[in-house]
Amino acid sequence: MTGSNQNALKDKLLTFRHGVHPEEYKELSNHQRIERMPFVEEYTLPLLQHIGAPSKPLVHKGQYVRRGGLIAEAGAYVSVALHAPVDGTVTDVGLYGHPNGQMLPAIKIRTDPFSTQQLDQPAQRQPEELAKAEFIEAIQRAGIVGLGGAAFPAHVKFNLSENQLCRYLMLNGCECEPFLTCDHRVMVEYAEELIDGTRILQHFIQAEKVYIAIEANKPDAVITLRAAAAKAGFPVEIIPLQVKYPQGAEKMMISAILGKEVPAGKLPIDVGVLVSNVGSIVALSQYFRQSQPLIERVITVTGPAVRRPANVLVPLGTPMRSLVEFCGGITGEAARILLGGPMMGIVQKSLDTPVVKGTSGILVLTEREVQDIDTFSCIRCGRCLEACPLFLNPARLGLLARKGLWEDMEDNNALDCFECGACSYVCPSAIPLVQSIKVGKSMIRERKPK
Image (spheres, rainbow, N blue to C red):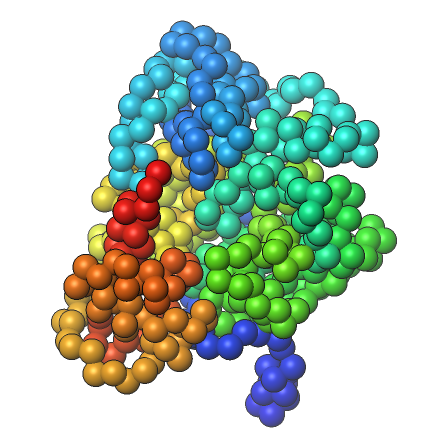
């Protein structure tokens, strides 16, 4: 394809206004087929692996559990169940290290070395047989959450009230974070399950139109899903979007495809749109068709300090150290470990924590990528304003945060920020804008009456 043709194609691709174009680094793992992680000796299952209330344990020390069996029930409406990833024996219910840096309640299971680890769970009723309330309860019981990173309970999002009309169902396959390729491989290798899960969800929410949004750097996913949808005879539109960060954010995707703006303080459903990650929809299909609750997920292990970048199907609770070792380990140049991508990932102090439902990737960087940069005063260049996809003023918000002016931050719509990091990425003075805004948002929430 000539340069002029490439530009013409780029001009035709839908996108949102503003945003940034970081290096993609997808080539490290985007063609690596999903591998299954071998079972390890012991698993640690935190009871908090989702937004909302922690799950409530149903097992005790010394109890034998089966793979896929219920070990913790939902602790509230905004909470989900938790299941054993292996046949084995509960060795403890106590406090253990969590990827968020805290010591939190968790269930430890020692793997039965003599078990075949075959999933042997009762068959689920077919979704077409369920009433809406039964369907929502089943999703909560299956432990399904958003697998894009936020881990919001899926049943809460899918449980639309009578006055909520879903005109558009939109599946998010953009995966705009650099390095990460787990969603890409899920779309290519689980295309039929994705279309099936979409059909199941569509049966209950009755959206007028179904979209699957994919950034244009994943052409094999676009081709594969179009073929799977045609084979199933299911009307879904696969839309390639321009490669730009943060294209995968719900509001940006809605803006790109529908030209609609989600008002400040509102949710996508308030403009008639329901958005879900592609991995969550595959999990939905696997639960109803294979009786498999959410006990494993695909994770990208990548970065210049990983010896063998890969996409791996990993049982929840697997020690991250074991997962990295499965991928050849890290090189002596390793300087920083992130959970997720480089734009929104969370720094880890060690690998001695478990994989949880929200773990989309393990990224290991060298000193070249994480070298310290001196911070200078704001030169009012306006680049952060041009980058912010929500048209906020990050420079002003950062300054207000550093001065502790929380009310002024709220007046300047700080709570609308979803912390994509585009402002920090473009700042020529290397001001940690998004970090300051995060602190300010936390202070605003703490000051609000309970």
